[in-house]
Image (cartoon, rainbow, N blue to C red):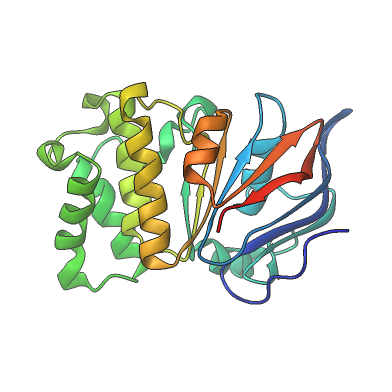
Length: 240
C-alpha cells in the first residue's frame, strides 16, 4: 500500500514510482509521503536512487511509471507553464558533487546570490529584500562575506550560501540534495539544527537526502531508508 494522499497543501508524495536509465533501475516501487510542515530525510548510500527521487520531485526528471505529486499536482506529468508554476513555489539546493556547484551565480556577490532569486520569486516585498538577505547570511555565518564571490568561499561556505538562498526565498517546499556534502564535520550539526529550526518556525515542508544516518536522525521528523531501488516504508520513523 502506498501513502495516504496528502491533499493540496505544499507537501509531496511519490506513489509506486519507477525510474530506469537504460537497463539500470534507479527506483522501483518507491512510495514516500511527507506531512506538511515537516522535514523528511531520505537516507541512502551512493547509487541508492536518492538523488533520482530528489530530481523527480524537483521536476528535473520524469518517472517512467507511478506519480510524483507536489501540492497535489503531478509534477511528473506537468509541462511548460504548469511545470514552471509548481517549480516557482520550490527552493532547490543541489549537491555540489553532482556538478551543479549548488547552481550559484559565480559572477555576482554572495549578497546578490541571495537577493536576486528573491526579487524574481516575488514573495518578499522589495523593500525587505536587503534586510532578509542580511538576516539569512547572518544565520548561516556569511555576514562578513556578503561582498565576496562564490569562488572565494570554502566548500562549506558555498553550501551555507545555497541554504541561505533557499531559506530566503520563503518557498513552501524546500528540496536539498546531499545535505552534508561540502560541510565541514564541525559545522554539520549546526546546519542540521538550522534546517529543523527553519522548517518548524515557518511551517515549510522539507525533503533532504543524505548518506549519513546521524544527519537523517538529527534533522528529519521522518526518516525513510532508500535501498535496492525502492523506499523501505517499514524503516520510516515519525518523530512526534
